[in-house]
Length: 272
Image 1 (tube, helix red, strand yellow):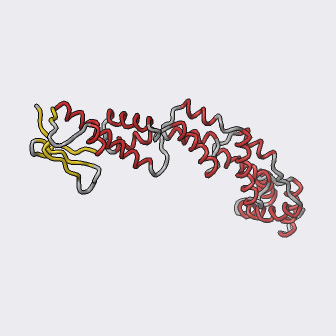
Image 2: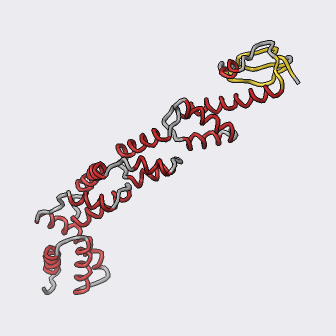
Image 3: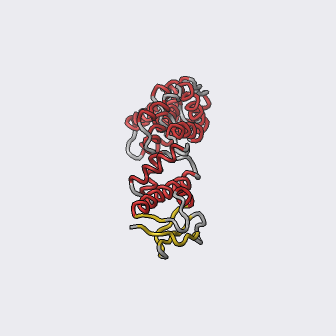
C-alpha cells in the first residue's frame, strides 16, 4: 500500500529532525540526513517497504548521533560504545551498523584508543603493564591487540617510571629501615602492575643505606612501640627475645638491637 507525503515540518525541540505526514496524518520522524538521503519531499509516494527501510536507516542515524555525543567527551572503545547504545535500547542490528559507520569515518578505532590509553595510564597513574592490560580488558579490547600495545611498553621505560614511584616512597618513608622501605616499594610496584624483575631492578639502583644517627632515631621510635606492645604480656628474657625478634624482622642490625635492649635494661634497673 502506497501513501503520499502531504507535509514535512521541522521539530521545535530539534531542528535537525523532521516530522513526516502521509495522507494528512503524522507517520514518523527522520533525521535531516535521512530526509536528504531518501529525497523526501512533499508529494513523494512511499510504499510500506520503503517506509520500513527509512525507519531502519533513521534508527541507525540516531544511534550514530548518540555515539558521537558519547565520544565527544573522550575516546572510547568499540565495546564501550556498544554497551552505551545497548543501554539506550537500540537493537543489535542497528548498533552494528552504527559502529561500522563510526569506524569507517574514523570516529572509532580500538588500536588508536588502546595506544592512547596506555600512554595516559603510564603518564598520569604511572601504571605498569599488568595493570594497564587489566584496564584494556575492562574496556573490551581484543586480547591480541592488548598484548600488541603492551609489548610496546619497553622494560627500560617501565623501570624509569617505576623508579620515580620508588624514589617517592624513599622520601616519604625515610624514618623506616631499608628492609621496610624495600617492602613498601615492592608492594606499591606490584600493585601498580609491575613485575618482580622490575621491582628488583629498581631497588638495586637505590641507595637505602643509613647513618648511625638515623638507626638510633629509628630504633628509639620503633623499638619503644615494640617494647610497649610486648611488655604488657611478657617480662624478662621472654620480653627481650620478643622485642629482638620483632626489630630484626623490621630490618634492624643485631648490634643496634642489642644496644637498644641493653639501654632498656639499664633504664628499668634490670640485671644485664
